[in-house]
Amino acid sequence: MSAVYIKRYIEDAVKEDLQKKMVFISGPRQSGKTTLALKILQDEFGKMEDKFYLTWDSAEDREKIIREAFPAGKGVLVLDEIHKYARWRQVVKGLFDKRKME
Image (spheres, rainbow, N blue to C red):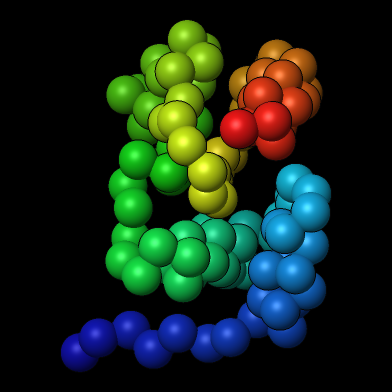
């Protein structure tokens, strides 16, 4: 049995805001934040692009985040559980400024 995607009420607003600014999705555990982020990635690229999804909970991805080795090019970049990283604010701001210029 495959999982059925339930559209979140904030989905359209998030997609619209992503056209001009960075978007933070917060909420309680198990409320669908990651599912929504992955759906937006899928919608943008037509398929799931693993390189544009990094989660602090993965040792491999965590190392990329610490080294600031982010994928190049335009498109949505999801940083899941990034709040667990003490320096997340500086990293996200610098990343956004750099990607905005590309």
